[in-house]
Length: 515
Image 1: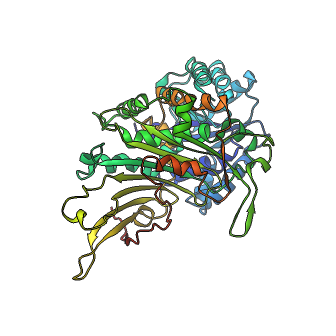
Image 2: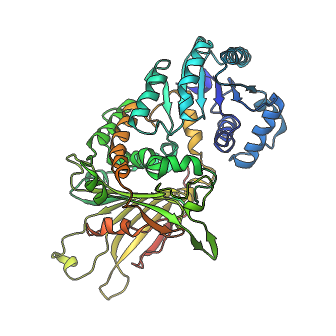
Image 3: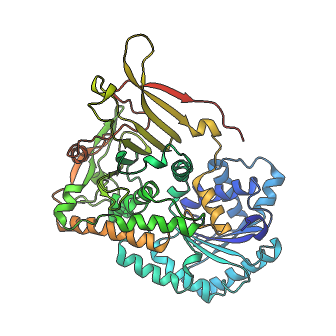
C-alpha cells in the first residue's frame, strides 16, 4: 500500500502532550518534507486544552523548529503544510464533541482528498483507550469509506489481567489487524538492522545457535532519574516500564527464526514462538536466583550530587519500587537451549546506551594456537543508541616477527556512514501505520505472552521486598547484577565506548555509504 496515493486524516488525541511535541509533529513534518505523505493528508489535534487553529499551528511550528531533522525555513512550504492542521478542544467523555470531530474530519477529507482513510493516534493514558474507541464508533468517525486504524502507545495494561480487559474494550470496535501497538524501539534503525544482519549474511546465520554462541547480553541504560514522572514510575517500576516491552522485544529479535515468507504476520509469528519458549519461573526462589532488582540512592557524577530515588518528587518515602533490574532469561528451544540471555536496564547509570552483545564460544583450549596463547573472546555488538552501528572483535597476529596474537575491534558507525540525518523511530512507525505495515508493531499475543512472563516476576516481588538491592546514582547497578553472570562464568561487557581491558586495536569505518 502506498501512503502517497491513499492519504489519510490523522486524528491525534493528546495533541498538547510531550510525545506529540517531541516526536509526532517532527515525524509528520519530516515525512511530508521527504514526500512520503504526499499531498492528501491532514492532521486534527485533539486535547482538553483550549487552543485556536492558529495557536495550534504555532505550537506545531515551535515543536518542529526545536526537535525535527528538517527545519521549517521555507515560508511557502510551511504554509502549505500548516494548512493541513486543525485543532479541537474535546472532553473525551463528551459524545457530542466526537460528532463535531467527525464534521472536521469529513471537511478535511474532502479538502485534501484523503479517501475516507483515518488514523486514530491515542497518545493518552491506557485507561482511556476503551472509552475513546467506543466514542469514535458512536460519533460516526468509523463510517467514512476507506480504512480506519488505531495506534496506541505503551504501557498496554499493568499486568496480563488488565491488558486482557483493555484489549477486550478495544476489540469491540477495532479488529486486531487495525490495531497498531507502538513499541518505539522497534522503529530504531539498528533494531531493524538486527534481522537484516542475521538473515542476509552467510557468516552469521550458521553460527546463530547454541553450538557457537555462549551468551547474549542486552543493555538498556539511562543516565536520567525519574525526572517529573515519579508518580507514574513508582506505580510501574523498571520491570513494567522497560522489561515487558522493550527488553523482551529485543530478545525476540535476537532469538527468532527466519520467517518463511516476507510478510508482517510471518515475522510476528516467529516472535511469538520465542515468547512462548521463555522458561517461566516456578516460584519466588527461582525469581531471586535469576532476577536482580535495585533502586538508586544518592550519588555523585563529575562533582555534581544526584539525589536518590526516595528523594524524587511524588515518590513515597518508603517505596520499594525498582529503578533497575537484571535477569537471566532462558529460551527453551533447540536453537537456544543452554544459552543465557542476560538483560539489564536501569536509571541513573553512568552511560546512556542500548546495546546487544553476542558473545561467541571460545575455540578449544588444547588445540593449535589456543594451547600457547591467551585468546580473546569473539564479540558481535549491535549498538542501537546513542551510537548506531556494529562492532566486531576477533583475534589476529600482531605485526612483526614475534609471534603474538592480539584482539582487533572493527567498528562500523552507521550514523557516520549513512549520515546523521537518518529517520527517527517515530517517522518509520507513523509511516508504516499509514501504509498498513504492521511488521514493527506488537500483536496482541506478543503482549499477552510478555505479560505472562513478567507477571511471574512481579508476583514473586510482591511476596517480599527483602531482595531489593541499592546502588549509588552514577554506578552500574547493584552488586547482585554482576554476581548473576559470575555464577555462570561470565561478565557484563562494556557498552557505549567504555574501555575494555584487552587493549584491542581499533579499526573504524568512516567511509560514507553511497546509494
